Image (cartoon, rainbow, N blue to C red):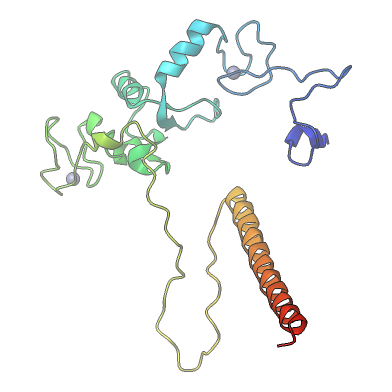
Length: 223
Ligand SMILES: [Zn+2]
Ligand SMILES: [Zn+2]
């Protein structure tokens, strides 16, 4: 494995091309597949010319349609989802994610703001008036337009272990909550903890050196 490819451990920047070394082949700007950059991409069919790039950029946004045949394409904007709904390329059963689903996958029929395009309430599944602001049956807000083109992520909160009533026979300390965190997030957390431990150690060493210095000072003045 070429360690330089990851750039982390390398003394030189990862993009530095040394004399005689062949540069890696370019990748498709739309799906990331290795591509010669001349004709259409063999993996996704996209052409890398300026006009196609701009057209794709114009369509980009925080909405994703689950498609195992083309899993690496960028997200699209809400208007693209709406257009696909009109063209029946997105149906109530299509699996999508976006700002109003907090980026979790869901059926389009239960995605706020998208379900209404099918004349459905995302919350109770009932039929709705296309112009209604809220569902007449369950009261759910139907059109959270303010979240359409941002990622729509919720606030970062500490994950608490589920509390349970204390048991008289059980005095074991509560187990650490088992939560499924993405491995990348875990490694970030680990390096943050390491940095915090190092900072504490530094502080302790600083305090001890200060004490020694003061003691030496007191001795030298014969106090
Ligand atoms: Zn491609
Ligand atoms: Zn409803």
